[in-house]
Length: 163
Image 1: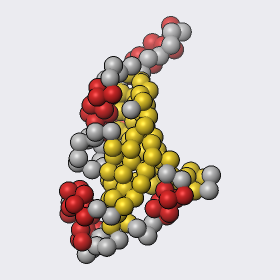
Image 2 (image 1 turned 90 degrees about the vertical axis):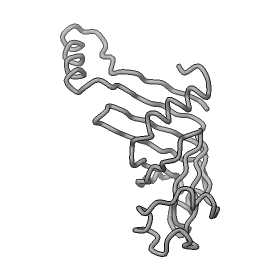
Image 3 (image 1 turned 135 degrees about the horizontal axis):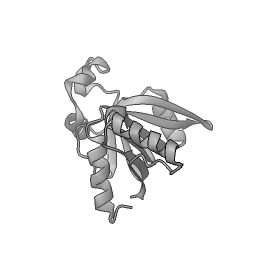
Image 4 (image 1 turned 60 degrees about the vertical axis):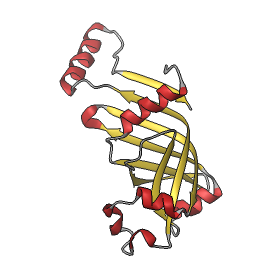
């Protein structure tokens, strides 16, 4: 287990910084709904930021129940992260300007001054990650060894952290 909150934050930042898309899950009347969200280039400090539109289902769902999950997967590197916390959406032009990149023009053709842009802020409370930097061949060999010997397979580092 990570020793301190700061070490947990740094580990999570290292794991998610190069994963381009996270799956944001909201609660809609007791039903879970997920959609892809572009990962921001900002360093993770215990809070995740995304840009979204004011007229989306996720905005409505977060206003009703702000509990969310964001999951990240990078199968090439055997890295998987699931974070949960509380979300809020709001308009903050300075934060929009900070997070803006040309990629968003596809969703907001009027640019960063579009009045429908909202900041989606996720304050992370808990996370779990699986990190196994070994290659697929190394994993396969370990898996086969576990099958042959009857020993439990260990696929790498797995931790639950509370921020």
